[in-house]
Image 1 (tube, rainbow, N blue to C red):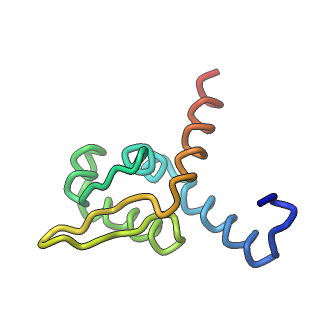
Image 2: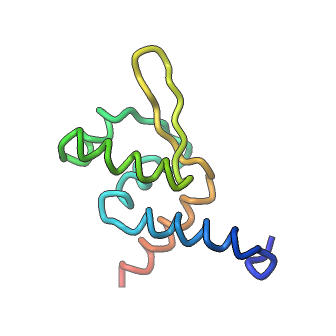
Image 3: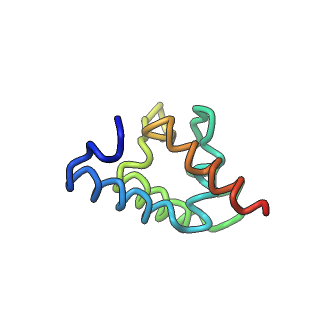
Length: 99
């Protein structure tokens, strides 16, 4: 599908997803969830070295805007990219910032 074929509603949804991603910690979260990885809040907060409540806040925003999905398994909730193509955005931004 070409971006020219999207409706206004789809473009707004895309813009909201990009706004949700546009934070250093959230970009880092997407980077950790690249390649189909599934991680818990605890695993992500340990990787980011930030408070678990802050991690949960960021995950909630990303999930609310359709960037992430979650699946409960026993006591743990695993977070993962809702659309595998989102990793392309992170890769693109990473390449653009490497000078």
